[in-house]
Amino acid sequence: MSLRSAIETATTGVDRWVWGAGHALHLNRFLDQSCLNGHREALAGKSVLIRTADQLTSAAALIELDGIASRILVCPPDIKQDHVPIIAAQAEIDAVVTTGDQPSVTALGANRTVICQHLPTPAARSPSPELETEWLLLTSGTTGAPKIVRHTLQSLTGVIRPAAVGKAPAIWSTFYDFRRYGGLQIFLRAIVGGGSLVLSDANEPVSDFLDRLAARGVTHMSGTPSHWRRALMNTNVSVFNPSYVRMSGEIADQKIIDSLRETFPKAAIGHAYASTEAGVVFAVDDELEGFPASMIGTSDLGIEVKLVDDTLRIKSRLTATNYVGPGAPPLRDDDGFVDTGDIVERRGDRYYFVGRRGGIINVGGLKVHPEEVEAVINRHRAVHMSLVKSRKNPITGAIIVADVVLTARDAVADEAQLRSEILTECREVLPSYKVPALVRFVPKLDIAESGKLIRPNA
Image (tube, rainbow, N blue to C red; front, side, top):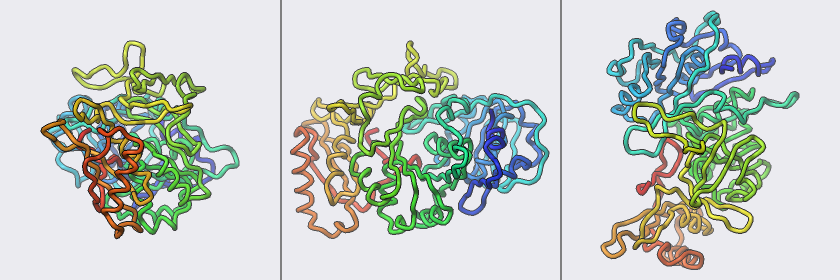
C-alpha cells in the first residue's frame, strides 16, 4: 500500500481535502496531478529529502513520492541548517525536493534538486509498480544532530482503520507540525482513514487557527497538553466544537483532562502514548490521568509493554526498524524491546507517568522528576501551567525552581498568597527535597516546535 492507493481506496464520492492556511489540496483530484514539475519519474527509486517552507507543499510531495521513491526523509521546520548536510549524508540522500524560499541545498551532495510547486498541476498517473518506501523520521530533544529512525508506512499506520460504512469521515486537525512523528500520526489518520485534514501554521495566531478549525468543521483535534493549555487561554476556543479531543507527547495530568472536559462537554477526551521509536502503544479514553495496570503485558494488537527498573519498554510491529547512519546505536535490545526512557509509578490499579530518565534533577543525591512536581502545582485552582527546573546550589548541587503561569482570572491576584498556597500543597504531598525553593510567576512558558515545554534539564 502507498498513500496514493490508500486515498484511491478510501475516496468513495466524498470530497476530501488537506487545508493549509492559504491554499488547499483536493485529495480526490490529486491522484491525477503532480507538484514535482515533471520530475516524478526521475525520482523513482531515489532516496529523497523533502524540505519545504510550508506543510501543505511537503504533504503533496510526500503523498506523490510514497511508493515511488526508495526512501523519504521529511525535514521538520526547526531543523538547524548545519544539521541538514549531516542527516543527508547519514540517510544517503541523492535527491532533494524543496521550494525556492529554502536555504541552499547544493552542499548536500545530492545529484538532483527539484523545486516543488505550491499548487499541483494535471499529470498522468505513474505506470511503474509501487515500491515499499522507507520513511525516515528525525528524533527530537537532542542538542546535536537528531537521530534518524527508519519506519515503513505499515508500521506508521498499523492501528489506523478506515471510517465505518455510512459514517461521516472525520475532519482531523492538530496543533503539531505533521513533519514530526506526533503530527504525522494525525496526517496519516486523515489520509488513510478516509477523512480530511486542517494543517496548522507556525506564523498564525492561535485565535486565527481556532477560527479556521471552527470554519472547517473539525471533528477530531490533537495536540500536546501544552498546546491545549495555550489554546484554553484563548477566548476563541469557545467557537470550536470538536467531537474528539486527543493529547499526546507530554504527560496529561488530571487538571488538563478536567479543563478540556469543562470546555468541550460533548467531546470524547483521550490521551495517547507513542514515540518516534516505539510507535503507537496505547490510548487512554477513561478521562483519567495515567493508564490502567492491565495495559502492562500484551495487547489485542500484539503490542508488548513491560517495565524494567520502572521504565517502559515496548515491542511491537509498529516500532521503528532501526536507527539509520554509520555508527548508529541499536534501537532495540536483544529481546526486541525499545527502551522509551519514560518512568512510571504504580499506585493502586493504575500507573502514572512521573518523568523521563534523562530529565532527572539531582538534589543532594536525591532524584527529582520535574513533571511530578508540575503535576502537583498544576492542581492549584489558579495555576494554568508550570515548568519545574533546577538552579545551581553550592550545598545541594541544585535546588528546585518553578515558573508558574496563572489563569487569566487569577493574573491580578495576591501573588504572595498564591505562592504560599502552592507551596503548602506541595509540602502536603511531596518529600521536602522535591518542594520548590522558589516559585516565580511568569506571563508564559516557551514551547518548542514539537509542542512540548522547553526543558533546560532535558
